[in-house]
Image (cartoon, rainbow, N blue to C red; front, side):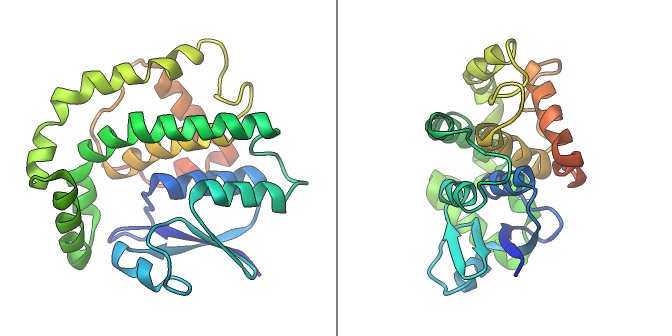
Length: 230
């Protein structure tokens, strides 16, 4: 039975946009595993599998169903030890835990707010209603107001990336000479906004842009095959 990955999509099922789903899509490609996508919209998550899940990704592998991106990555590493490692040992796993927290606290908050209207526009009519209501409750203001404030926070966001930018002076990937799951954690955030928004998060010539390009080229250009926002 093929592995099934439930992906978060908007009106266009061919453009999955969740950063957390992208971590796992890249992890599956890294492992060289065959899998199929199950496109899922926000309002349909409650109908996935037994209906107990509230967020994606969700992965089914035979009789096994796992949620939470890091838990899925750990499962893939344990279930397929003969395939290329996502962590290269417990040290890599611990590093990935740190990178995940850094990414979610330092990157996701700004990226999500800066791409908010673009993400809204990606949804079909029913999911736009859900998206607006849930996000305006989260931010405490209209989506349009959140969008208007993004330029004022852009420089601060770019400064937060300095640890990544500086590290890339010494090695091509977070994992060293070749990528690890830690790379996919951060790349998932950049693929999220690549697919959903034309906003320029990174300045032209930033070394991070070169790293993103290297990630897009991985696994025979798997991630690049998904259309960027236009």
